[in-house]
Image (cartoon, rainbow, N blue to C red):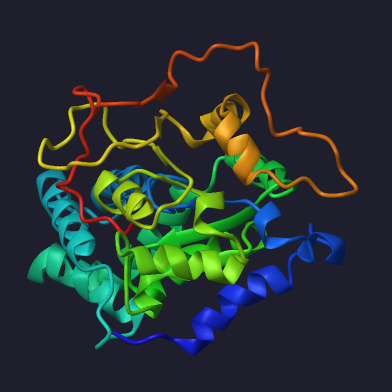
Length: 314
């Protein structure tokens, strides 16, 4: 793999074109800056759930509109979803051509003539279900008044940038890194260090938020970030072979402000408030005691487990 100068430039431009920040903020001392780094898939957007929902809807379309027997429709959509998760992009094909080919193979010879039309409908349905929750968008806008925001996602360049563009994510982040453009991917500490360098912050002044212990949390720990927040995809026990403990575990990314408000360490090392804005409107009522937030001090929660049967981009 090689570094794509074009995509790397796009990451830097996210900061250069950023509306919410003025020059006084950008010139603040590096040590005063703090950053929050987010994973994309199954952290900010429900990729696994959205892809399953799109294929489930396509079963109805295939049976009701195309006359495909339900058992064949289920078999075809399941095969596509399996193969797509294994290989979401193939550099030997145009992105649309590759997905259409996957649909053609999944539908089988009898129904392969439907592949192009089904692909178009699948793509529309996929992004319908991938649409970011308005509450999460509001959270990002509020956080960005006080922190630099970065997005670090593993996956093929074209597939991941398609999500960024179709979901209009550029405007919410100061740095976006896709592993497909770089020589490394999470959990390699270098991709976290690259984000810190682009943002102009020290690793100790950053926190990482993600759904995978083996990439987001382990990588954040190895990069010596200031903290890690885990949002497990399932509520089952984690793999005992993973020797990594997140600083915090939450059920949903919208609970992040509760952690920021209750953690003196992160409040001190991560917050930088705009000089013309002394409000902390992203912080929820500190008197609330959310039982769904768990601080992990000494051991992994034996009731948490990452579903590593998934090969979703992360």
